[in-house]
Length: 283
Image (cartoon, rainbow, N blue to C red; front, side, top):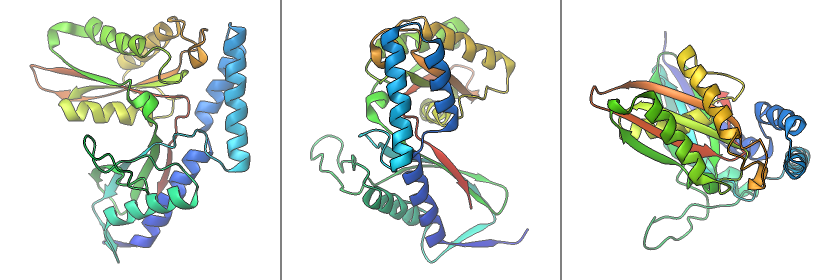
């Protein structure tokens, strides 16, 4: 396979469009789940909240305005083909410029501060974006982009469990994390779970899990069953839409895993609100 050249401007334009689209258009999987939940929600107040969320999402798409005032911190998962060369600029620069233009021209709220502790001065363009890159075989670049709001991000957690905790310990930590979050992450939520790897890999898997369509399941039937069990348990907690009570606390639970060390069993839970913004494109 020959080396393929991609102009940095093309990458910039794709990233720009992805972030505008993911902030204006809710995913079909989320919208379908919201509509289904609205039909099965037993609480009148919860049903009303779900109806308002659906109406909000439909207006956002029609008017091309943000789904939520928190348009998130830019996060990208990139599958970068090993036969690709970027011309007239770097990949990172192209991504950052795409984010800048999207948040400026798309009238999206700029929420990133340059220093996390002391200065906390707004960068005024929502950069830098967080980029997770995996090198794959081929001559294409696949980009999945999302804006992660921090009302739900702040409710996420990670724990370095040891193997002795077993599957029951894993389930307990996940359920405790969601229970402790309560109404704060703007339910109904998508619960992304990462299991395995190292401290940082586990957290990355949990974030990646929130980007996976909720109408899919883990290919391993054991984890698919665990996703279903956790989903049912979470919806029995009773927080309901907007935390006002009901049987719809979660829209989905997605689990991603990878091998880990013999002495460890890391588990991370990344909670995402119902404005689960993400879009993908292949260049």
